[in-house]
Image (cartoon, rainbow over all chains, first blue to last red; front, side, top):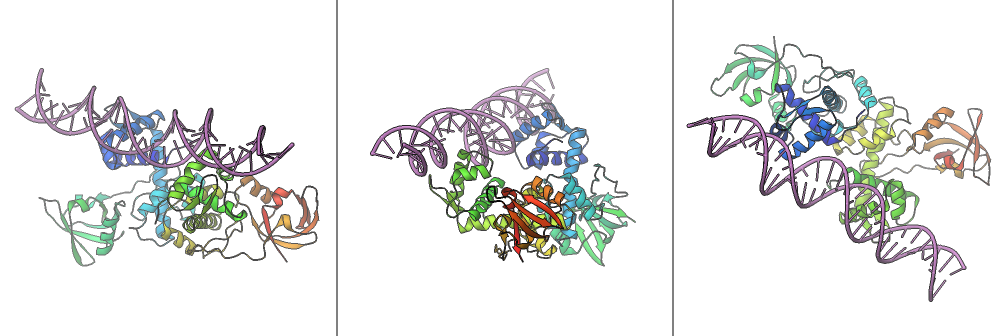
Amino acid sequence: MLRLTQSEENYLKAIFTLSQDVEGSISTNDLAEKMATKASSVTDMLKKLCEKDLLEYQKYQGCELTNLGSAHALAIIRKHRLWETFLVDKLSFGWDEVHEIAEQLEHIQSTELTDRLDEFLGFPKVDPHGEPIPGKDGRIESVSNRILLSEASVGMKAVIMGVEDDQTEFLQYLNKIGLHLGTPIEVLDKLSFDGSITISMDDRQVQFSITIAKQISIKPL
Amino acid sequence: MLRLTQSEENYLKAIFTLSQDVEGSISTNDLAEKMATKASSVTDMLKKLCEKDLLEYQKYQGCELTNLGSAHALAIIRKHRLWETFLVDKLSFGWDEVHEIAEQLEHIQSTELTDRLDEFLGFPKVDPHGEPIPGKDGRIESVSNRILLSEASVGMKAVIMGVEDDQTEFLQYLNKIGLHLGTPIEVLDKLSFDGSITISMDDRQVQFSITIAKQISIKPL
DNA sequence: ACTTTTTTTTAGACAAGTCTAAAAAACGAA
DNA sequence: TTCGTTTTTTAGACTTGTCTAAAAAAAAGT
């Protein structure tokens, strides 16, 4: 199997993630922003990854992962989420403390290790933030009936199913207001001019900006 | 705390290990051999590590770790041995399968993670190869009464306490002949001209070359 | 003590991944 | 369509860690 550097792996993961929100190819600039680097650096890397058949790239046309590239990205995401699960379930870390450590652990090379860890954790389906964990074969079991909180309609009753994991402060804020996976909520109000949304949870009212509401996914009841 | 690259960490660990067998300073050539690299590369790195006060180095005089350098080396060794213990105790790896994976895991940066892993494992004193695990404070609890099998005298009865961990083939060989930590043995014969040694274990006789006998430590009964 | 051998350092080069500055291509608005 | 803006690429440079080849220092033998 093709051996990749950490940097190459991080690019693949970033492209994969961006591709989930967008149709078609990913622009150099978007990728540069995601990677917190310069567009010129991205161009260099795209050439290299294209050379290795991990993505398709043509000058000025952005890039798109090949099946090979997607498989690699999924393997890294699998490792990331399994390690996060390990840290929370076995070592009692909070969900706001594990992202950075998992960013390192996801680069450990050993399929055997990954699969044994999976077994040790009892083959979890989702990580501590509700994100689905790809299986050994790279397949993600579809998480049914989920929508973003930002898309919910007034009056809807639902349960918190997932949150974005990459901003520690955001997760700490959710801790502070007592929002966890599985928390039942009801949508009380939505302001059309700024998209902010008011919900009730645990008999309290909380208001979220559109930015926050887009980072929380729920399952309507 | 000072942030080190993986390469810097590997050098510190190698110097620390070499220092345990030798009095005084470590030569550039010995270090180059240990690191499987060229002497010129070592010289460059020594300059850099000296600049960071991790070791003392003067041209043509070899190097010696400072207290700061030793502390870093011990932290890495602590991580390595804790991860090996995790892999064997929790994920059911064999002792011959964990070294390479632990070589990667030892570079994960998070003291919190290390300490929680330590606790999760029940604060083990030794790793799966019998090597002592440095504590949070960097102290190694002295492993009492151990000698190398190569130093044992004929007629001595003893128990296997530790083996070198860095050669997979060696460990596989030990597996094959059924030698484990805790195995009781008796020294039957020693040949002075080549140092080879014959022992009995489990009612069988096994002969070891001097090279192997130096990689096994025992506790005389 | 002098010469030879070994060890160690220096000098210059390279690959990976990044940067800045400038050029080229694509996009968009009138 | 054409001009200005934005995006993307190229060119050249820097850093880290490595290498080879050659010079310098230390060690060893006679």
